[in-house]
Length: 370
Image 1 (cartoon, rainbow, N blue to C red):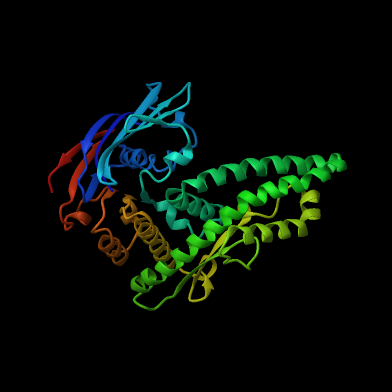
Image 2 (cartoon, rainbow, N blue to C red):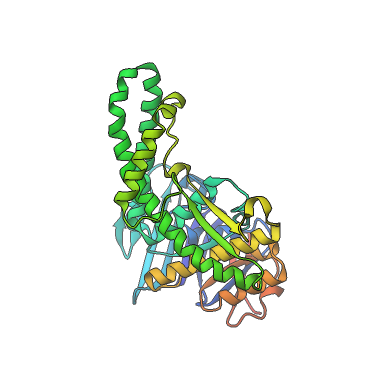
């Protein structure tokens, strides 16, 4: 997949922008607060139509306007396509692919595949389980649109079950209806766990090779999905459901006492080990960053193996956070992919073949020479 053109109006501080992108490396240069990350965000937004920095559409619209529009022209699946998103302050967004309106989130997932690497991702290991679950959910949603619906269903059921658990404390007779909600929760939750567990198995295998290369054979990276039970690795969703139901039954009294659902994929985590020890606790900052690099590169490889299309790599000023050896590793791995890089330093990228350089100033983008 290759993005050919992008048109933006009133997206954050970018009032008007229209440009062609190189099919290899695009380096967006400029000082801080000029709109470089906003440009990346506008591209990433087409990955499931979600921002990596905002929760509301209104936050993406320029302060002086009531609506914003981003159009992405891309070549994929043996044809030229155009993907458009219209955002409004006072009504729901409008999304079109090749002129046809798309209304379901599950139909958007996977149309544009991107892998984003921002400085905050370097904290993927340090942060809590929520960030690792978020990474998994975004990565899998690009590959399996059905997963988007399962997540949505699960979260809605979880809210309703939690409300029931709180009510049971006041009205014990409601406990008779709890099994119905547990069964619904297990239906959606089992599929989520099945997909996450399978994804981690693939990710871990690729990451081992990546990390061995980065560490020059000195370190072994293992990644494991820590679900509601350590006895995972099943080959079908039904086995996950049966296990989840069993675990929920064991914790039934605790859930009623807490008024909160404490078993399910919303509580799961990913264990990242270097040489058999928890990276979060025992790895140095450099080792943790190498592990995250391994994970993000593996994410891109999985997208390619799943659909035969290389994802677009988005690097948000990441090189300023990495030492020379890790910078060189990334440059080596992105050679055959379309990449958009933001940076304040042009010098790091002069050696990249066929790279296109742009200057971003106050939301305006201008192509410049090497």
